[in-house]
Length: 353
Image 1 (cartoon, rainbow, N blue to C red):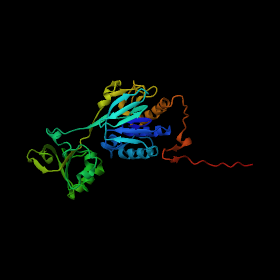
Image 2 (cartoon, one colour):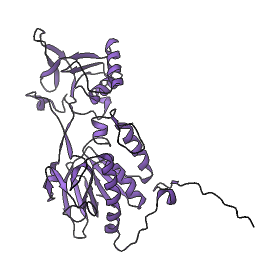
Image 3 (cartoon, rainbow, N blue to C red):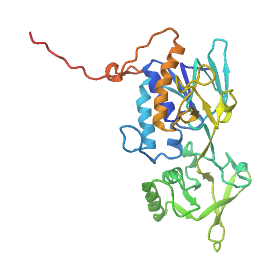
Image 4 (cartoon, helix red, strand yellow):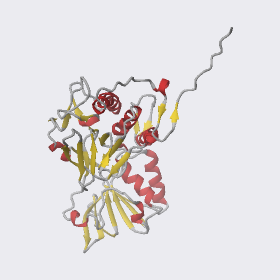
């Protein structure tokens, strides 16, 4: 069983920043996320989309924000359970909690923080009747290990950043990459669109627009896909493939958390915003887009604020009766669990006799 001071469900920006705030209080943290990498939507859906409302950053790419957060929390050595969904919450006699994932991994902590953004994410699947028959035998909704596609024929469907970025990346891995999109225009970052267009001209990507994958064929595993074109004069295209990767984004759902006995309002968790963002279950907090209260703003910077406030109260719960005097990082610096320390240089003032 994994033991920690604070268990954070959700490794998006709010969950990651919570690690930093908890670390300043000398609290160990561990994060659970259903996605295979940290960053939440910022990493999975729009890593190359600019964000304009992060303080001190007039513009920052979502993926860069995640990279910066990961660097910021590195000294606090957080643990991660990735690619697993938080399934059950049980309270022990000592008042601590055990959270078990869908893969049976157990985590124990006196405080649980739900920072799951809009909830757990499930892939949006294209309406192909037999697609479930090929899941794990040729059909994948996200790419975890690019080496799986080494020297294989791959068809990617989608028109956003994920589809473009992975199509570009896999040109150096797969033997053949086909990118299919139902429109002529892509929704991704301009540089990605231009790069994909260049690779198409060089014959490294087969770019098929105004078309959709409508049929999958194969016996024990995927062997071919059929493309149907918007232009009815065009005949269906039959492509022999090894892998089909539809990247149409992720659909947010509270999932199993919705059955934990929490007060839910419009698919969000009600909290006490006037004090500590605690839920109706003492010791369980909810911060970021997953919570709701009067005046709630679903912004990343709001999640950062909630994380800072919540950690102060969670510290008192973990350490009852222990007084903590908050110091600004400009005064106290940042001391990591790895032995590192950042602090402002102290000026030496020499007195004159």
